[in-house]
Image 1 (spheres, rainbow, N blue to C red):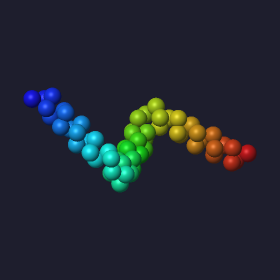
Image 2: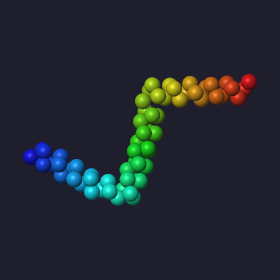
Image 3: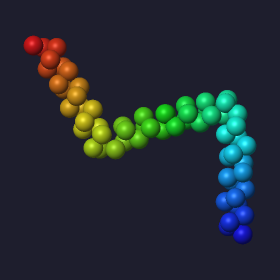
Image 4: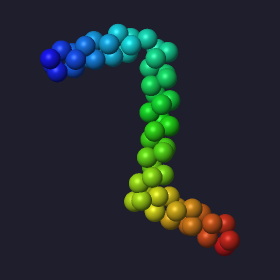
Length: 61
């Protein structure tokens, strides 16, 4: 039963993946979620803050 649902999901995604408009929507959603994930994950947030601090220090010099 679970295999049937999984296969149906793959077939549905395959038919949607042939449309360039759907792929663009999926790409925008993926990029948005990637940006949100970078802001939420503490390690990446520290990297971004460090880069911002270095850029601010370079502007002051």
